[in-house]
Structure formats: C-alpha cells, structure tokens
Amino acid sequence: MLGAAGRRIAELVPRAIGSSGRGFSTRAATGYQARLSQHYHNTLRDDLMILQYVPPSVRARQEDIEQAQLQAMKDNAGGTPPSAQRQRQKMRPLRPAQAESAAHNTAYVDKVTVHIRCREALNNKHHLLSSLMALQVIAGQRAEVVKAKNDAAPWKLRKGMPIAAKVELTGDRMYEFLDKLVEVVLPRMKEYSGLRMDAGDGSGSFTLGFDNTAIGLFPEMEMVYDMFPLVTGFAVNISTTAGRNPAGRLLLSGLNVPFLHARKVKDESFML
Amino acid sequence: RDPIITQRASKFEEATDRYFDWLQFISADRFPRDFFFKKGSTAESKWMELEDGRNAEWYFDEASKPQLKSVKKIVKEDEDVVEKSEAVRSIEVSPRETEADATGDQQSLERKLDRTLYLVVKSSAGEWTLPQGEIKSEELLHEAARRNLKELCGGRMSVWMVGNGPVGHHQTDQACTFFIKGHILSGQAQAGVELASEFKWITREEIEKTVSAEYWRAVKDMLSTI
Image (cartoon, rainbow over the protein chains, first blue to last red):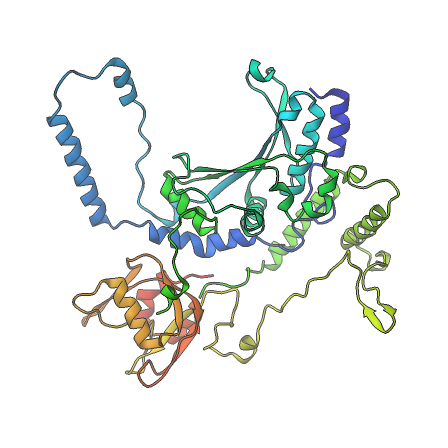
C-alpha cells in the first residue's frame, strides 16, 4: 500500500531492536528471564492460587444454592413464555464454569498490545511513521501498520487505508514493557490514580488509555523525544488468561498496577 | 522471605541465550541512524563510538576490540578529577553474595538473596519446626496464626498473610496443625525468654536437614523449590 515510499520506510524500520548490538538494547541488564516474569512464576502465581482457592465443601454449598435458585425459577415460572428474541438470547453459549483454582490454571498475562490510532494519517499516511517509530522505541520491537477494515464516511476513511500502528508483545519483552509502564511511566503521570475497580471486559482483557503527554515519560524516549514530529496518545491492552474480571484484576494488582479507590491499608496494620 | 534478586541462568541456558542473541545481532536490520541523528553531527559520532563498543562484545579476537576513547576519561581541571564521560554512566552492581552468605549466618534475612527463606523456630522440647501454636476457642485460624507468630518471634515483624485459609496440614496423634502462608515485608524475628529460644531463616534444602523426617514429609510440598 505504501509503495516505493513504503519500501524506503521499511528500510529505515529495523526488524529487531532490542538485541544487544543494535539500536536500543533492552536486554543489556536482564540476560536471563525478565524480573517480572520471575516474580510471577516464583512468588505471585502461588499466592494467586491460594487467594482464589475455594474448598470443596464451600464449592458444593455454592452449587447447591445455585441449583436451588434455578429450581425456584423453573417452579415459579408463570405468565407468558419469553419472546423469540429473548429465547435466542437465553440460548447464547454460557461462559465455561470456573475450574477449581490450581497452579496450572492460575491466570497469567498472555499478551500486551500497544496501539496508536493516528487521526492525522487520514490526510497524510506518512504521519504514521512517527507512530511506528515511537512504538518501536517504547517496545523494542518492530511495529506493524494497521489498515482500516471498514469504510467510515464521516471521517473520510476508506477500507484498506493505513490508519494505525500496533505492536504485540509476548514473553520477556512483554514483562519488561509492563515493568517499565508500572514502575516508571504511571508514577510519572500527572493525575493518574489507577484502573477502575470495575475494569476489565469480562474475559480477561484490560485496556489502559494514555494521552500524548504519556509517551514522553518512557525512559527510551528521553533522548529522542525531539525527533518525533507528531506525538500521539496510545492504548495498552493487557490480555490475560483470566476468565472473569476479579481474577484478572487480582493478577494485575499483584503485578503492581495501581487501582482507583483501592482499600488504603496502612503500613502499620501489617505489623504483628 | 521471598527472593530479593533474580535467578541466575545455568551455564547451558546462558550459552544458549548468548547464541540466540548473536543470531539476532547478525540478522537484525540496520539501525536507522539517519532518522535519529543529523549526518556528521557530534551526537552521531558519539553514538557510533558507543556502537563500536557494543558490537565489540561479539568479537572473537580480544586483540581486535576497539579501545573506547570516551569511556573512563579522567580530565584534570584545576585539581578536579572528572571520571567518565556523561554518555556512559556505568552502574555499580552489588555482589550477589552478601556478608551473611560468607559467614553462613542463618539468622540473617540477607542470606541467599535469590532463594525463598522460611522461618523455623526451636520449640521448648528442642525440635525445629515452622512457627506454630494453639488456637483459642473464639479465634479464627488466620488470627491464631498471627498471634502465635507474634508470641514466638516478637512483634517487630511486618507480615502479610496470604488469604485466610491454610495451605497444608500436619496430622499427629496429639493435634492437627494447619499452615498459613505469609510473607515478611520488613523487620526481623527475635529470640528470647518469653519467645522461642532460637530461630533460623533457611531454604527448603536446609529445612530437610533440620526438621524431623516425619515433619518434613508433611511440610515439604508447601515449600518453594526456588
């Protein structure tokens, strides 16, 4: 789609930033597994499993209560039967029941996607280069161009136009990015108190949105901030394997992501 | 006490990681120098120098490594010694082994920083166990755990208990002991007249050698191998 200019842009954009010899090294200090990854596997996962464990006797009691409620609904069913639309809604596939908390099915962070939706690219697709480079600087990995899937006449958008940039992080790079975000960027932001207590989409994904003041707070951006002609906001989507919102929020809380209106526990209350 | 520093890779893992790093290095596309630096600028030449230094770690021949000019430049200006250029600020890394490792001080919390340490106390009978005590009638399990820990090891520890339920149990003829997991956040245990006579912070392997065989069988599956 970008044509000859695109090939030149592709030359400028290296495939692998993050190795110890080229570009911005993100592996210089780590060597082995990322710190956050080790923390999750060595300490956090077991704690999450323990916190979410429901003993069999309590589970059985909860299931009995649910069964009794279902039975009561069936027995007391009165009035006209539901409409065809409601019938179809009822037959929607149920979410899989939550399995017993164990080490192998504890929630973990699967993938982090950093996404920049560039409005200026509607007029001039070369503005997207700024977003692509910014994502590479932040994530240490080559970013992809996202093309529009649908037309949107109010914004003069046509199908197939390059409109956004994204980078999908997994493994150690993902943990390092999350570490940077939580330990460096979020504390530096003005007026950021954390995720909402009802955050989450219901199937384990959490999205944090940032405005254009946030991108400059990354440590890698300090030296090169002036070179970016266009500074935009970005969105970070954290995809976890949690099946429900509370499990996902517990996982993020364990990774030190701040939450709004979180219970303020005084340090003294931990003293014996 | 959770691990304080990250784990070290084994020799094989280190060698494998280095090999894949090298593959990534030689196959990576060139860094877009002309995007980030103006051609011929001092910033560009400084960066190129640093890049030479960074690339030098992949050289097989030690003799052909370039000598970095900008690093460790000691400039004497009116008896002021200015060490190292601003571009390269080397980070002082603390050693992985501490004094407590050298002396083998098993009471210290600074020992074996990459491992999980567990608190064991010596009972009046002379047996080493995890801190335990009786539960009172109107008390919940996790409350009893906190109270017993305080009575045995003093109130100078900051502890977070993971949930309210036990992670294991040990059944004997006399009693059944339930174990609740906790993390020490700060402070230190104490030994004394009113408290347990002795305490130790030891790893899983050391616990196996310290406690009785029957107790070990009950407790081993709760302990982390890291």
